[in-house]
Each structure stands twice: as C-alpha cells, then as structure tokens.
Image 1 (cartoon, rainbow, N blue to C red):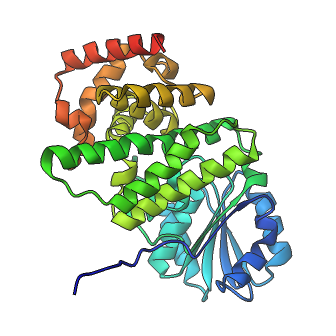
Image 2 (cartoon, rainbow, N blue to C red; image 1 turned 90 degrees about the horizontal axis):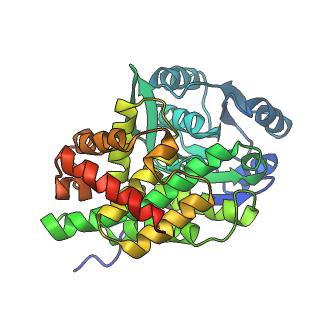
Length: 353
C-alpha cells in the first residue's frame, strides 16, 4: 500500500502578538505544556530584567536562569543547572543567542523547549538548530524543534531597528536558497522537498511584497511568521537546505575574511541578491533589491564597507565553506577574475534599477 501521508514535526502552538509574555502562564496552561508553571525560564542580558519581573509575577514555581554569550560553554553550564530538579519545560525568552542556548540545554536534558522571542533577528526562534560559538568559531547543533513559539511584539518593537532588519534579510534569503535547491535538482538530481520549499518561500514572498515598515505591527507579524515558517521548513526536510544556499556561503566567507563586519541577516540578504542576479532572475532581482532598500538593508558591497574586489574575494572563497552544498556558486565555478567582472556588472545593474 502506498504511503499517502507523512507526519511532520511542528510547534504545538504559535502565538504572535503584543502582551504574550504577560500572559505566558495562560499560554503554557492552555496548551497543556505546564499547568502549574513548573518551568525553567532562561532569559538573556538585553531585556532580561524586565522579562524576569513579568515571569516571576505569574509563575511562582518557575526558576529563572540568566544566560549570556550564546556559547556552547554557556549552554553546557545551563544544562548542568537544569538537572537540579524536574521541569515541565524549558522556556527560552530573548533574542537568538538566548533561545539557541536554551534549545541546546533543553535537548541535552531531554526536556521540551518553548521559544519566546523578544527580537526578530533571524530564523532560529523556530528551527531545529542551535548556533553556538565554541573555540572562536560558530557551530550548528541539531536540537528538537521548539514545542511552542511565542513572539511578543511589545518587546520586538523596542529592539534596535538593526536587529529587525537582520531578520528581514534572513527571511528574504530563503527565496534564493530555495532557487539554489531547485537548481541542484535540475543539474544533478538532488531531491527537493516540496513542502519545505513551499513553507520557506511562502513566508519570504509575503514579506517581500508587504508594504509596511519596521514600525508596523502587521509587518512585524509577517516577518515573525516568515521566520517561523523557515524554521519549520528546516524541520520538515531535516536540513537547512530551504533556508541556506549560496547566500549563506557568502555570509560564512565574509565571517571568515572580515569577522564582525555586519549582522548575519545583512550579509545573507546581500548574498541572496547577488546569487539571484547570478542566476539571471531579473524580475526577482528587482523585487528583492527594492525590498532590501526599502528596509535599509545593504544591496552592494560598499554598503558593508567593502570594496568590490573584497566582496569578489569572499564570493570566490564561499563554496569552500560548505563543500557538501551545491548552489549557483558551485554551478558556475567562476575563477576569481571572472567573479570580479560579475561583481562589477552586478553593481552596474543595481545602478539601473
């Protein structure tokens, strides 16, 4: 008998709205995650004090653990603390580093994890991956997808615009990542998970065409949903493929050659735009460039403080960062001299938009 359906791991609950943290006890109880609030709450350094006060007012049985740094060592230390007693769940509240630390510790301890985002800088809030620093390098660690994802727009609205812009770049890069995956399918027969592509691309499309600004709740909600869908897409296919292509390879190269240059989202957004141009997708290129410009994200190397030659060097270096991944960069396999010429043409194309 043919297999007519499959089981997909997704969060049990998704809440994107204002006031969510103030109602966290009700959310945990209503979703049968924790009836009595017997949870470990992990908070970060940014808005952590405000969050901790809100949590203590409503979750008497909770233990609050401050963390900082987003390192593997911090996650290991948190996991050791979680062994002191039994918890219904680990609730990570904060930005990406805090949530990734909580995800790793919860997976190590074998406890369900609830992701509560106070910023929208990247798609880690709902993904089955923790990105943590160790020995001066950033590694990606497989973890369980969060049991629930909560985004409190009250806190998101207070974040620096740069963090939200980074999330926009990360979400939009899914369009290029999916196109690279489909290219790999056409050129070398790599299997494509259509459901994962649908989830990742649908959220990104909604964001690209949204007329709002970083100050609009409707736009922030669309951004949150796009990032969540990207995380679920990775869970569906068991890989970062629908959210990571040549765009992320370029970002990894920039991290290696110019550490601390810009945020992850700024780098992958620029990388996605360049890869889209390399694939000859003129309409998509114009639409994506307009969106990045509208929200103040970089579209050319100079916007990151790089010369065209420095960016070309990073593009040439990029395929070596993910030898197992086939993207437009591997497909074209351009020598560095040709990359310089393509970058010059790319910048010229932006001038004519």
